[in-house]
Length: 214
Length: 274
Image (cartoon, rainbow over all chains, first blue to last red; front, side):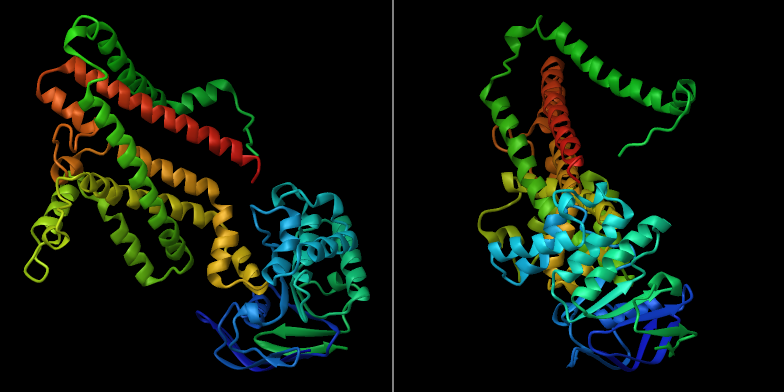
């Protein structure tokens, strides 16, 4: 579950004030808004990457407003994927499990499962430099899911892809969500990009978030 | 991947313009030295011993001090440049300016200031040298300190450029995956700038190798004690032994170019992996 109560975020002269939002457990919500409306800023605040000036953030029944990102039990897919330049796809998927102290055998099994589901098996030894846009997005999603997060934040995960790659990537995303529903907030400025995935759609317009449809 | 612009050979050659003149100057510098050594050294062979204990020690001391100071410079520069790049603000800009001071000052002045700092500035009635018991001034440690003072400033500049190119979002993602900010630096940022680290270390090494001004003032030019190759050249010129000076200069050039070539090869080799 994601519950945002009256949070305010300041970024220079730009401000988001009294933002309220709620996504029930296991549901996927879309957050749409124009470019520059503050979607990414809000997402970064929810991830703990940006200080909030006030209000409260609750993720999976835990108050996380002042917790660092590593203690929020989240998965985050940024707009540009932000893959680790020096790491192979395998190393991306191993990253979080290793940090959590998972055994090598378990990691191997887990990576096999995750790479199979997201069509990354043939790419495991490749580095970001040689991957296509769609492949990068899938690696970024797999990396976020490898943390077994309670909540998933996606920042325009299909942006910059051609229609075919977008459709293919969306298919993989849909497959993942149908298999293991994780509470998700999917930020985009194209509502149609979300397909049939979202259970509800919120809109961010001029600093106000409102429920558009559910 | 390296991209090549579809341009004519004539265009490229003419655009280099003054670059060709500079290239000719560099080749001329090396050629002059090689020519002088080739023509003069055989004639005065008896006066010059390439394996004299003093020259061998100067050679060893140059390589040793340059390597140690380059290591120190890199160890200081990598975390410092990271902090300056990732936490930019007014204080960060001020710090950047301060870290550039050793590059902006004449090297001789840097050496003179080091001499004053260790030998003259009183801390509780005594200079740093007196506090330490074993004076740093006019010792091998002074050579390393003089080299590292300037080498570190250059390495910081070089590392800043590397970290600037690196998207900080990857480190942010790492934090959402369970990393502390330090782990994100260590596990994500650092491996991504490996080539930058090698580059910064080689810049610091090359600069240390050729350092002269601060070493002369702060460490002195004591034959067999604090003599490095750059000061050897100075001593030999001062004594009127040009053929010896040219030979030592050639030795220094060979060492520097060899290291540069090895580093370049390493960097090119690593490139494919990144």
